[in-house]
Image (cartoon, rainbow, N blue to C red; front, side, top):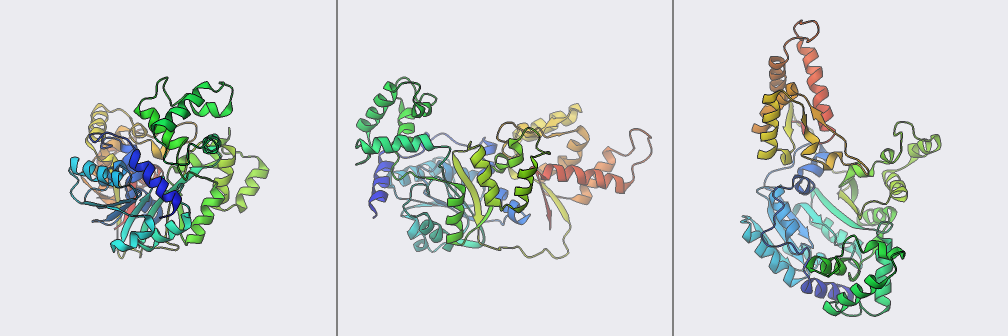
Length: 436
């Protein structure tokens, strides 16, 4: 095994990550499950819902918390986890068993060995792993080989610009010998003493006080290991990450937190950009636009994206009809109960309060509100996917007359109103519009 991989293995055997208790679960965290649900990237790419009975790989599964999230976000999926750390894999097995996940398996192996499993995957989650490996292209190539033709992969690396002071601190601690061997209690204590004694004006000190308490508890120790003493840690820029994708033969789909990567949202007047910038954007590739965003505002710790095989396409549906469904992460009892209360009370409903990822920009959250008529018209979506035509008939029952003239609403007019509502909600993936 490569020397740095052996150090990484030892480090995560000593301190499996993340250190969530066995009982802790993301079951009620809709936003966390939203980004782990294959529906989200699959719809972004194919404008269809994903297949049933999928198989998911968590490559670098750690202690299994995100494998648990993948299982909860994708009910019925078979979860496969791999990791270098024997201790991490042991904890991952215990975690999914504790939460009674029905179908999973975990293996101690490197990413480059994944083809030995003989399994092809619909979705691959490779979260906070590639930033540590010596050759990310080799890892991506290995993962691509086990990704189904229409499969989707989530990958990310640390953002060089956002974490620059952490990388400087890592180099400092490397130079004084704290990363020569696997860092443990002694090295953690040395980091703590040095950072505490640094003058507050020191730039690197700005990475410290926000996260570490006056006395190092278990959470603080985890933070020190994962930021100041992390073996193999490297930072990347957007061009470097996209070079890795191209070399591995993978195609960019979208950033995982895409609303935070919209260049216009960085300006006071998004609809009136400076002329020179507007002209430059007309010729810019998606990677160049994302790089511009990161140069102006490197607010994201991870360069986090979805990718897949180049030119992958679904065959067009034959003789299908327009269908509508809620995003699966909105179909839960909490949302349903609040929806019902607002509907019965005739009050508008702030849907964006219940799923924030699609509306969370770099500085503020958009508000997505729907009125009581819309709530009533879309209520059947909690029972499952509905045809556009059935929702239209319900709309006509709820809104039969023009509120100003009291004349009956023409079906064509009602269809236009419903279509505009659905397109508005679809912009945020609150509803999915498919042909089936």
